[in-house]
Amino acid sequence: MFALPFPAVDPIALEIGPLTIRWYSLAYVFGLLLGWKYMIFLTRKTAGLIKNKNVDDFLLWATVGIIAGGRLGYVFFYKPLYFWQEPIEIFSVWHGGMSFHGGVLGVLTVTILFCRKHDIPFLTLGDLICAAAPIGLFFGRIANFINGELYGRTTDVTWGIVFPRGGHELRHPSQIYEAALEGLFLFFVLMLMIKYFCALKYRGLITGCFFAGYGISRFFVEFFREPDAHLGFLIGFLTMGQILSLPVIFGGIWFIRNSLYRS
Image (cartoon, rainbow, N blue to C red; front, side, top):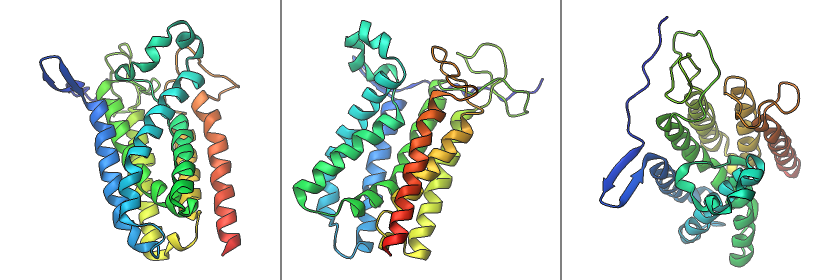
């Protein structure tokens, strides 16, 4: 049976003595830095409501929100019993284990606090964050692929891959599906909305489209992604990722509705 070879990429990008830098960590660095630059580029379209300095100051806040929220989301949503027994492992982020949905809650929290402190409109900053978020999602899913984690369900498609941790069966490269949908496709859709339809003028519209777009993409790809072994299917054919995506989709629709209603 034809199968694509799993790329022999070492998860460790650089190792100097005791210092180890992994692609997984670099994915967060690249995502944050490129997202920061893109947000600065978009500030010119906010009619002066968000300044470059605001975006510069927010970078550290966003980093804390993503890492803390993403890790705690994984702890509470996916492995609460394990981390209850091994609490010190909560801080071992280099072992993997981050939740997008937890990261959203973390960024939402720091964004609210940041906007209150600097007296800037929450929805305007939120739109810039959501316009840049697919950049980080793209790099994050590529890092998942390099790590050979979060792989797909068994398949007989010609582009199936045998993952080192997935046994000897062909599997969907679901990380690539997510990188393409949640990352590249969603980024270009939002970019085109901003460029040709002046979407940033409608506060909350980009935020809503991002949430709805991400939720739909994640819900769809979960049909090809192997459910977490310790969770399996929770309600019928639904996985934890799909269940958590439903409020994200409805939240996105709510933001879109309110944005268009205010206009």
